[in-house]
Amino acid sequence: MGVVAKYSIKDLEVLTGIRAATLRMWEKRYEIIKPLRTQTNIRFYGNEHLKLLLNINVLNRNGIKISHIAKMNHREIADKVKDLSFIRSGDDDLFDGLMLSMIDLDEMLFQQAFYKAVARLGFEDTINRIIFPFFNRIGIMWQIDSINPAQEHFISNMVRQKLISAIDHVNVPIHSAAEKVLLFLPENELHELGLLFFNYLLKNKGYKTVYLGQAVPLTDLPKIMEVSNPDILVCNVSNPMTIGDVNSFISKLNAVPATKKVFIASASIFELTPELPPHFQLFVSLKQLASKF
Image (cartoon, rainbow, N blue to C red; front, side, top):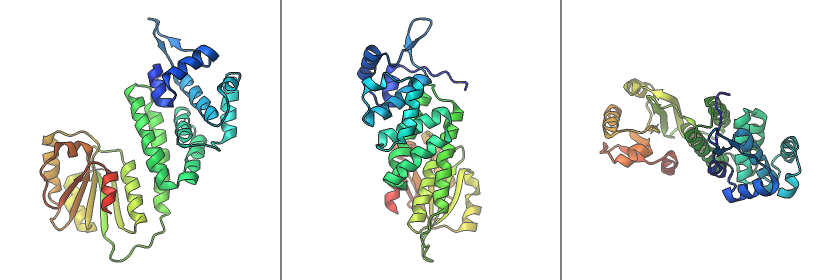
Protein backbone atom coordinates (compact mmCIF):
# COMPACT_ATOMS: atom_id res chain seq x y z
CA MET A 1 0.00 0.00 0.00
CA GLY A 2 2.97 2.31 -0.34
CA VAL A 3 3.88 2.60 3.34
CA VAL A 4 6.26 0.12 4.93
CA ALA A 5 5.51 0.38 8.64
CA LYS A 6 8.45 0.19 10.99
CA TYR A 7 7.39 0.05 14.63
CA SER A 8 9.67 -0.05 17.64
CA ILE A 9 8.52 -2.13 20.58
CA LYS A 10 7.56 1.15 22.29
CA ASP A 11 5.38 2.04 19.28
CA LEU A 12 3.62 -1.31 19.64
CA GLU A 13 3.10 -0.63 23.35
CA VAL A 14 1.34 2.65 22.55
CA LEU A 15 -0.77 1.26 19.69
CA THR A 16 -1.83 -2.00 21.34
CA GLY A 17 -1.81 -1.13 25.03
CA ILE A 18 0.37 -4.18 25.74
CA ARG A 19 3.37 -3.30 27.92
CA ALA A 20 6.75 -3.58 26.24
CA ALA A 21 7.94 -5.92 29.01
CA THR A 22 4.99 -8.23 28.30
CA LEU A 23 5.73 -8.16 24.57
CA ARG A 24 9.36 -9.11 25.23
CA MET A 25 8.25 -11.95 27.51
CA TRP A 26 5.80 -13.27 24.89
CA GLU A 27 8.53 -13.04 22.27
CA LYS A 28 11.07 -14.89 24.40
CA ARG A 29 8.83 -17.52 26.02
CA TYR A 30 6.33 -18.25 23.26
CA GLU A 31 8.00 -16.85 20.12
CA ILE A 32 4.67 -15.23 19.29
CA ILE A 33 6.30 -12.40 17.35
CA LYS A 34 9.67 -12.42 15.67
CA PRO A 35 11.05 -8.95 14.91
CA LEU A 36 12.57 -7.99 11.60
CA ARG A 37 15.95 -6.30 11.39
CA THR A 38 17.33 -3.42 9.39
CA GLN A 39 20.59 -3.67 7.46
CA THR A 40 22.27 -2.23 10.55
CA ASN A 41 20.71 -4.99 12.72
CA ILE A 42 18.13 -2.76 14.46
CA ARG A 43 14.99 -4.65 15.46
CA PHE A 44 11.63 -3.42 14.15
CA TYR A 45 8.09 -4.67 13.62
CA GLY A 46 5.66 -4.27 10.73
CA ASN A 47 1.89 -4.06 10.18
CA GLU A 48 1.57 -7.85 10.24
CA HIS A 49 3.05 -7.84 13.75
CA LEU A 50 0.65 -5.08 14.80
CA LYS A 51 -2.38 -6.95 13.39
CA LEU A 52 -1.31 -10.17 15.09
CA LEU A 53 -0.87 -8.45 18.46
CA LEU A 54 -4.22 -6.70 18.20
CA ASN A 55 -5.90 -10.05 17.53
CA ILE A 56 -4.00 -11.71 20.37
CA ASN A 57 -5.05 -8.88 22.66
CA VAL A 58 -8.73 -9.47 21.86
CA LEU A 59 -8.46 -13.20 22.55
CA ASN A 60 -6.46 -12.72 25.73
CA ARG A 61 -8.91 -10.15 27.13
CA ASN A 62 -11.75 -12.53 26.32
CA GLY A 63 -10.35 -15.21 28.59
CA ILE A 64 -8.08 -17.25 26.29
CA LYS A 65 -4.69 -17.89 27.89
CA ILE A 66 -1.60 -16.70 26.08
CA SER A 67 -0.11 -20.21 26.32
CA HIS A 68 -3.07 -21.52 24.31
CA ILE A 69 -2.96 -18.65 21.80
CA ALA A 70 0.74 -19.37 21.22
CA LYS A 71 -0.17 -22.81 19.85
CA MET A 72 -2.46 -21.30 17.19
CA ASN A 73 -1.30 -20.11 13.78
CA HIS A 74 -2.07 -16.63 12.49
CA ARG A 75 -5.15 -17.73 10.52
CA GLU A 76 -6.59 -19.60 13.49
CA ILE A 77 -6.07 -16.54 15.68
CA ALA A 78 -7.79 -14.25 13.16
CA ASP A 79 -10.70 -16.69 12.69
CA LYS A 80 -11.16 -17.01 16.45
CA VAL A 81 -11.36 -13.23 16.78
CA LYS A 82 -14.10 -13.14 14.12
CA ASP A 83 -15.97 -15.91 15.96
CA LEU A 84 -15.88 -13.90 19.18
CA SER A 85 -17.50 -10.92 17.46
CA PHE A 86 -16.30 -8.79 20.38
CA ILE A 87 -18.97 -10.41 22.56
CA ARG A 88 -17.26 -9.49 25.83
CA SER A 89 -15.60 -6.41 24.47
CA GLY A 90 -14.61 -3.40 26.48
CA ASP A 91 -13.32 -0.14 25.09
CA ASP A 92 -9.92 -1.66 24.33
CA ASP A 93 -11.37 -4.41 22.16
CA LEU A 94 -13.37 -1.84 20.24
CA PHE A 95 -10.21 0.20 19.68
CA ASP A 96 -8.48 -2.90 18.39
CA GLY A 97 -11.37 -3.70 16.05
CA LEU A 98 -11.22 -0.21 14.57
CA MET A 99 -7.44 -0.42 14.19
CA LEU A 100 -7.67 -3.76 12.38
CA SER A 101 -10.43 -2.47 10.11
CA MET A 102 -8.27 0.54 9.18
CA ILE A 103 -5.12 -1.48 8.51
CA ASP A 104 -6.98 -3.91 6.20
CA LEU A 105 -9.55 -1.41 4.84
CA ASP A 106 -12.17 -3.84 6.14
CA GLU A 107 -15.63 -2.24 6.12
CA MET A 108 -17.33 -5.28 7.66
CA LEU A 109 -14.97 -5.27 10.63
CA PHE A 110 -15.51 -1.53 11.09
CA GLN A 111 -19.28 -2.01 11.10
CA GLN A 112 -18.95 -4.85 13.59
CA ALA A 113 -16.86 -2.82 16.03
CA PHE A 114 -18.91 0.37 15.61
CA TYR A 115 -22.34 -1.18 16.10
CA LYS A 116 -21.09 -3.21 19.05
CA ALA A 117 -19.95 0.05 20.63
CA VAL A 118 -23.26 1.78 19.94
CA ALA A 119 -25.20 -1.16 21.39
CA ARG A 120 -23.17 -1.01 24.59
CA LEU A 121 -22.50 2.73 24.98
CA GLY A 122 -25.03 4.58 22.84
CA PHE A 123 -24.15 6.77 19.87
CA GLU A 124 -22.85 9.85 21.72
CA ASP A 125 -20.56 7.92 24.07
CA THR A 126 -19.29 5.82 21.17
CA ILE A 127 -18.12 8.98 19.42
CA ASN A 128 -16.69 10.57 22.58
CA ARG A 129 -15.16 7.48 24.24
CA ILE A 130 -14.16 5.39 21.24
CA ILE A 131 -14.00 7.30 17.96
CA PHE A 132 -12.28 10.55 18.96
CA PRO A 133 -9.64 8.83 21.15
CA PHE A 134 -9.09 6.40 18.29
CA PHE A 135 -8.23 9.31 16.01
CA ASN A 136 -5.62 10.35 18.57
CA ARG A 137 -4.01 6.95 17.99
CA ILE A 138 -4.11 7.59 14.26
CA GLY A 139 -2.22 10.81 14.96
CA ILE A 140 0.51 8.76 16.62
CA MET A 141 0.67 6.52 13.55
CA TRP A 142 1.14 9.59 11.36
CA GLN A 143 4.02 10.72 13.57
CA ILE A 144 5.85 7.41 13.21
CA ASP A 145 5.11 7.30 9.45
CA SER A 146 3.25 4.02 9.61
CA ILE A 147 -0.11 4.87 8.07
CA ASN A 148 -1.11 5.28 4.46
CA PRO A 149 -3.31 8.30 3.62
CA ALA A 150 -5.80 5.86 2.07
CA GLN A 151 -6.20 4.15 5.44
CA GLU A 152 -6.87 7.44 7.21
CA HIS A 153 -9.34 8.49 4.50
CA PHE A 154 -11.09 5.13 4.75
CA ILE A 155 -11.70 5.30 8.48
CA SER A 156 -12.56 9.03 8.40
CA ASN A 157 -15.16 8.49 5.70
CA MET A 158 -16.66 5.52 7.52
CA VAL A 159 -17.12 7.67 10.62
CA ARG A 160 -18.38 10.58 8.52
CA GLN A 161 -21.08 8.33 7.04
CA LYS A 162 -22.20 7.33 10.53
CA LEU A 163 -22.41 10.93 11.69
CA ILE A 164 -24.38 12.05 8.65
CA SER A 165 -26.75 9.10 9.03
CA ALA A 166 -27.27 9.94 12.72
CA ILE A 167 -27.97 13.58 11.83
CA ASP A 168 -30.51 12.51 9.20
CA HIS A 169 -32.30 10.36 11.77
CA VAL A 170 -32.60 12.98 14.52
CA ASN A 171 -36.29 13.16 15.30
CA VAL A 172 -36.41 15.94 17.89
CA PRO A 173 -39.12 18.58 17.31
CA ILE A 174 -37.75 22.03 16.57
CA HIS A 175 -39.60 24.79 18.40
CA SER A 176 -40.41 27.88 16.34
CA ALA A 177 -38.53 30.01 18.90
CA ALA A 178 -35.41 27.82 18.82
CA GLU A 179 -32.14 29.61 18.10
CA LYS A 180 -30.49 29.06 14.72
CA VAL A 181 -26.82 28.06 14.71
CA LEU A 182 -24.52 28.44 11.70
CA LEU A 183 -21.62 25.96 11.76
CA PHE A 184 -18.53 26.14 9.56
CA LEU A 185 -14.80 25.60 9.19
CA PRO A 186 -12.78 28.51 7.75
CA GLU A 187 -10.38 28.39 4.80
CA ASN A 188 -7.81 25.57 4.82
CA GLU A 189 -9.70 23.66 7.53
CA LEU A 190 -10.76 20.21 6.32
CA HIS A 191 -11.17 18.04 9.44
CA GLU A 192 -14.90 18.26 9.98
CA LEU A 193 -15.78 15.18 12.05
CA GLY A 194 -15.85 17.17 15.28
CA LEU A 195 -18.11 19.82 13.77
CA LEU A 196 -20.42 17.20 12.25
CA PHE A 197 -20.80 15.62 15.68
CA PHE A 198 -21.49 19.05 17.18
CA ASN A 199 -24.20 19.56 14.55
CA TYR A 200 -25.73 16.25 15.64
CA LEU A 201 -25.67 17.33 19.31
CA LEU A 202 -27.35 20.64 18.54
CA LYS A 203 -30.09 19.04 16.45
CA ASN A 204 -30.66 16.52 19.21
CA LYS A 205 -31.24 19.42 21.60
CA GLY A 206 -33.79 21.04 19.29
CA TYR A 207 -31.68 23.84 17.76
CA LYS A 208 -32.08 24.90 14.17
CA THR A 209 -28.77 24.44 12.36
CA VAL A 210 -27.21 25.52 9.09
CA TYR A 211 -24.18 23.36 8.39
CA LEU A 212 -21.68 24.75 5.86
CA GLY A 213 -18.83 22.31 6.45
CA GLN A 214 -15.24 22.64 5.31
CA ALA A 215 -13.15 25.55 4.06
CA VAL A 216 -15.70 28.37 4.03
CA PRO A 217 -14.22 31.69 2.79
CA LEU A 218 -14.75 34.28 5.51
CA THR A 219 -15.35 36.93 2.85
CA ASP A 220 -18.59 35.08 2.06
CA LEU A 221 -19.93 35.41 5.60
CA PRO A 222 -21.88 38.68 5.13
CA LYS A 223 -23.88 37.16 2.26
CA ILE A 224 -24.36 33.90 4.17
CA MET A 225 -25.56 35.86 7.20
CA GLU A 226 -28.00 37.80 5.07
CA VAL A 227 -29.53 34.62 3.68
CA SER A 228 -29.56 32.43 6.81
CA ASN A 229 -29.90 35.05 9.59
CA PRO A 230 -28.49 32.85 12.39
CA ASP A 231 -28.46 33.76 16.07
CA ILE A 232 -25.14 32.03 16.75
CA LEU A 233 -22.06 31.25 14.67
CA VAL A 234 -19.87 28.26 15.60
CA CYS A 235 -16.42 28.02 14.04
CA ASN A 236 -13.86 25.30 14.70
CA VAL A 237 -10.13 25.82 13.97
CA SER A 238 -7.68 22.91 14.21
CA ASN A 239 -4.67 24.20 12.29
CA PRO A 240 -1.93 26.04 14.23
CA MET A 241 -1.95 29.83 13.95
CA THR A 242 0.42 32.70 14.65
CA ILE A 243 -0.85 35.78 16.44
CA GLY A 244 -0.82 37.55 13.06
CA ASP A 245 -3.01 34.82 11.58
CA VAL A 246 -5.39 35.11 14.51
CA ASN A 247 -5.69 38.89 14.25
CA SER A 248 -6.46 38.63 10.54
CA PHE A 249 -8.98 35.86 11.23
CA ILE A 250 -10.74 37.89 13.96
CA SER A 251 -10.77 40.96 11.73
CA LYS A 252 -12.61 39.07 8.98
CA LEU A 253 -15.06 37.53 11.44
CA ASN A 254 -15.75 40.97 12.89
CA ALA A 255 -18.04 41.59 9.94
CA VAL A 256 -20.60 39.59 11.95
CA PRO A 257 -23.02 42.06 13.61
CA ALA A 258 -22.63 42.58 17.35
CA THR A 259 -26.21 41.33 17.81
CA LYS A 260 -25.00 37.81 16.97
CA LYS A 261 -22.95 35.47 19.13
CA VAL A 262 -19.69 34.13 17.70
CA PHE A 263 -18.28 31.00 19.33
CA ILE A 264 -14.78 29.88 18.28
CA ALA A 265 -13.38 26.50 19.32
CA SER A 266 -9.62 26.33 18.86
CA ALA A 267 -6.81 25.15 21.13
CA SER A 268 -4.20 27.01 19.07
CA ILE A 269 -6.08 30.33 19.24
CA PHE A 270 -6.95 29.79 22.91
CA GLU A 271 -3.27 29.52 23.80
CA LEU A 272 -2.53 32.89 22.22
CA THR A 273 -5.20 34.68 24.33
CA PRO A 274 -6.09 37.28 21.66
CA GLU A 275 -8.29 40.30 22.29
CA LEU A 276 -11.81 39.60 21.08
CA PRO A 277 -14.87 41.74 20.35
CA PRO A 278 -17.53 41.59 23.11
CA HIS A 279 -19.84 39.28 21.13
CA PHE A 280 -17.07 36.69 20.59
CA GLN A 281 -16.31 33.82 22.94
CA LEU A 282 -13.30 31.52 22.68
CA PHE A 283 -13.20 27.87 23.78
CA VAL A 284 -10.34 25.39 23.85
CA SER A 285 -12.44 22.70 22.15
CA LEU A 286 -15.88 21.85 20.79
CA LYS A 287 -16.31 19.63 23.85
CA GLN A 288 -15.92 22.66 26.12
CA LEU A 289 -18.21 24.70 23.88
CA ALA A 290 -20.93 22.04 24.11
CA SER A 291 -21.54 23.04 27.73
CA LYS A 292 -22.87 26.41 26.47
CA PHE A 293 -25.87 24.77 24.82
